[in-house]
Length: 165
Length: 165
DNA sequence: TATTTTCCCATGATATACCTTTGGTTGTTG
DNA sequence: CAACAACCAAAGGTATATCATGGGAAAATA
Image (cartoon, rainbow over all chains, first blue to last red; front, side, top):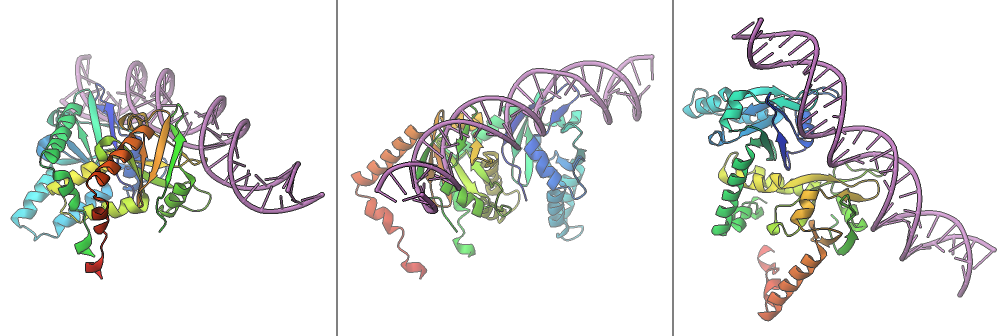
């Protein structure tokens, strides 16, 4: 299964339209069970995460994976109700149009402070949409934290697989 | 599984096209599950590592191994989100063309300061792409550090496998 | 009717596919 | 053993397709 990779900064026009980066579209197509050549994939936009600083896009398949994890929690448990609220009420279906664009509703643009440009960021099984300056800030903050305590090696150590084999 | 071995310096033309050394192509073919004779392998280029001084190429299989390790971390955990950002946003899919070349996007060339030549360096499960002079510098610095403290023997001692047997 | 939203078409820039040339190595044949 | 043919890797050029983006008409909504 292909993953969301790379970054792309695209323009947002007066009508709120943005191009989804072409490589991301390929992933969305692959992740939509109903998609077939010549048609436009559906996907899910979540806007309640990361303190509303960015939006997150999921292919239908990967959103389904997340939903299934929630479904494993005990019905009516506090945790499940909260997660269901966060993931379901704070998300919408979106459809890519003929030209590979979507319309970002005004509400979502306001939340992420997106005006004339949007930064698309590949995160593997999902992607994020940021206001470009906020993204750069977030990235620099992360890199700073990693370098100042020499955490880079530590973070990669989570990938050490000796105990799992 | 074949590994990336050796060095090769190839020209980069105005469009950013470079030939992938033929032996490296054999490894990429072997590491692409969808590859079959007569077709061109896909692979992954990572540009966020080693302080952006070089690019790194992974076969789909070995990148997949890394991705799977990340997927074992709890979804939405801080560690996982950081790793996904580092590994996914700072990488792209690339495809070898009919003639055994790839195009290096301008952004990646700038990061690694690559202009007219590129040095390909085998690193086993991955390979690196350097601006030739930067590579020589990096290599000399490493060798110098090793020799001035007589660390060569020490570094090889890490390969001691007695505890594993 | 005024305003927003959806659909459709147009365009310039860029990236991809295709074809050609060059040089080196191998190996075949007279 | 020399000459030639066949092959393959690297590198260069041109044509075609795709992508991001802009604008306008039609449809829907208020």
